[in-house]
Length: 298
Length: 287
Image 1 (cartoon, chains in turn blue, red):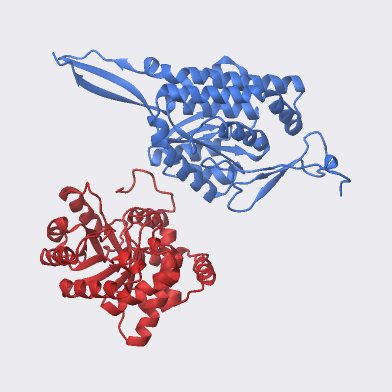
Image 2 (tube, each protein chain N blue to C red):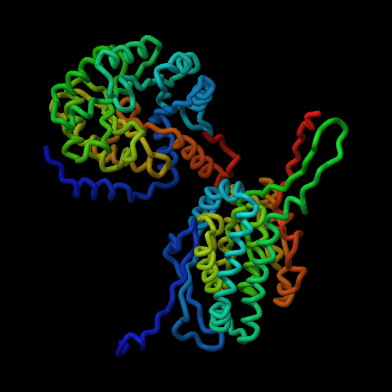
């Protein structure tokens, strides 16, 4: 027993982020996170919830429930909310850097670089929200007295399977472009990257993001990917993987029920810092183009 | 009458913890579907909406059986009647000044008679709960008896609006009065107030009809309505019936669930069981 409260070490339990709440896994399972700098496994640094199939089901339900509101929100408002996320993340950059050092053994400088790059990435996508219609939409030349517009609309509920490394920048780079057009997202993060991802969930929860717009599940990817692949209420999957079996499973199941998909190689951590890891081409795969005819009215 | 509220709530909650899987779940979902009174009671109801509801009632999908009845406002009874003729689905009308019941008895009787003449085989009426809360049980009894007579051969379901009665003692009292006055079913709620059917109120009513049957030999059914949206909740209610009154009560002539979106979820759950996959947003019809 510590002699007084200042001696007490509190080991945080990281819980899932589903529909605006932080529940434990319905299965009750957790995984221990150990100090990456120590060879032997002593007292774990933290416990993280290990999501099950039913947690995924609940997450998809939450995302589906939030879809109409998020997709229907003005693009400018979505931009403001993403901007708020960027603000919150930037303000807490040093605490994220601490966590990257603690849980991933990163150097302080590299950790700070990743935290700041993540906030900048959110800022980039915040700015994209109200420009998307100009960038992806068109006015089409047609014969006859009609206006003919093509406009981007969100695909729906999209699962994101980000890379393990870099844990924060990888996650942000995957989920932010999905949120831009109005998709709602279920991110499935590997246990190793869980503490950072669930810290990020706390940023999301305090940035006016409506509940259900983004859920973060942490767990065993090999266990969860088949459930993600076969869940028919997911309209798209953004998969970051080098595992051929995983890619084949997700893509073949997606073709079975017309699920949108994009698969990206994991690559080096440095590649996630590069400008090529952001851009309109990250938004476009999860956008549907709707074309409407409108009378010119003489 | 005094009800032990803590024990009642505790038992109702305990009976919701059963794990119902695989074949039992399949049977439970089909059974729940066969007991649904598929309901639309909106001011904006149109003949088109009622026709669509009726088609859903006859064949809900996923190989599930038809529901027990469609429940509509009296004005729409003829539409529903035409649509379900020749099928096992019955037509139920809410009458007697639904949902508040604050109209003179003469109008309630006319409302009821007209619905029966238009082809309603079941009538859901609301009790004069103002009189009940004022302690005038005799008036409540007499009104129900008069409406039972007006309904003639139609099955009379008496809505107690349990969410507005204040206590389980009052709910049990109201249910006894309804049973004595000739109700064929006692029903929890209109679905129009903030507190609807709960497992505990259902259990309370099930106890009353059990005691009433033991005392008089006459069977009165129970209908739970309002806020029952998921298959899981519906299965919970079936467990309550089975554990209180036994499997012989798990028939649509003795137990009903008044609902609308529940049907969607029953179909989704059944599809999930058949395909092993969670159902997509556009895979099944939504109402």
